[in-house]
Amino acid sequence: MKDEDLLRYLDGELSPREAREAEAAIEASPDARRKLDAMRQLRDVVAARIEAEVADAEAELEGSWRKIAAALPEPPRAGVWARLREWFDAYRGHVLTGALAASAGVVLTLVLHPSGRMAGAPPEAAEAAVVESLEVPEGSGTILQVPSDDKNAPATTVIWLTPGEKDEQAEKAEDAPI
Amino acid sequence: MNNPRERPSIRQHDDDDADAALIDRCKAGDRDAFRLVFERYQRRAYALAFGIVRNRDAALDVVQEAFLKAFRNLSGFAGNASIYTWLYRIVMNVAIDYKRKQAREQKVDYDDALAHLEEEAPAGSGELLPQLLRGDPAKEATRREIREKIDEALAKLSDNHRAVLVMREIDGLSYEEMAKVMKCSKGTIMSRLFHARRNMQKHLIDMLGPDADEVES
Image (cartoon, rainbow over all chains, first blue to last red; front, side, top):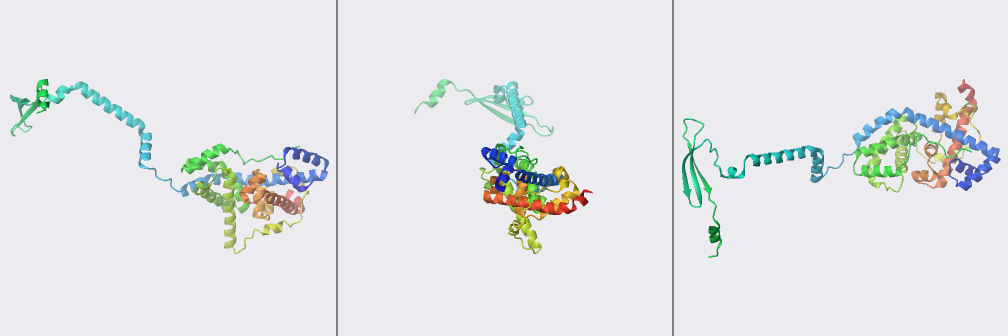
């Protein structure tokens, strides 16, 4: 048996058919068996030596990552949208909670302050004294006296104009072609 | 008869699909993924680096530099190759560069052709190792005195011979995989492996033979 074939047999490089033939040849040849044993011995010796070295260097090897990580280039900065998305992903819970709270606030405000009162009531009406109500073209007016916080200062006069509702006929008349 | 292709303990697992997914993440700049690659291959990379430079600190430096180079050159990784053959090639190149630089600093010519002189060494083929290693060579190899002898024998090999020995005996790489790492033909790998084993065996027999009794006692 040629040394080359013995080497390929040892290294598992023969086809299954070649390996079967090699096994038969090795069985029949004391010289081939001796060579094969010698190569296996050597493999065990070399492997044991290097594996022992790897095991001894294990701790230092683990520590190598810190040095590698410190020397790695910084990852490229993401674009504006990617960063916004990243921010949203990170704070998704807070954003949703905030949005829900704001919605609840708007709903509560609408329930507690119906639109008519909000739009029509003069500011500070409860504290201001109504001096006079007026009828003005296309609406009504109210003259209010709003007292100042400073008792020595004069009150402020506010004229609050509220547009009146136009009737349908008047609107049609306005929209009619001249 | 035993399965001829037994071994290797530091070759933990090869999962090419998982590797491909990791590499995609690394290419996107994911450091955590690169750390996983490091953890998966650090021991194998170190074994090869140590096999070539034969010094722990130097081998650790080689591993660090090789992984940094790998990270910077991820775009050059084709994906049709196994990640460990690609990494091995980088480790091998960095280790050889280290040896060349070291030789320049010591004003010694680095000439890998020296390796070919070794190939002319008389063959020890077929000779079994001395009696003290015959019982359990792997166990004996962990004894300090024996370790030193093995290191001396390894030191007498060329870098290429040590590299093929480590890749084959420790890692179980096939001839084809080794040929990819070393960028040479399978025939060259076979030749290097054959001469590496023969020379290593001869050096060990020379060193352990006459001193066997002394070491054993």
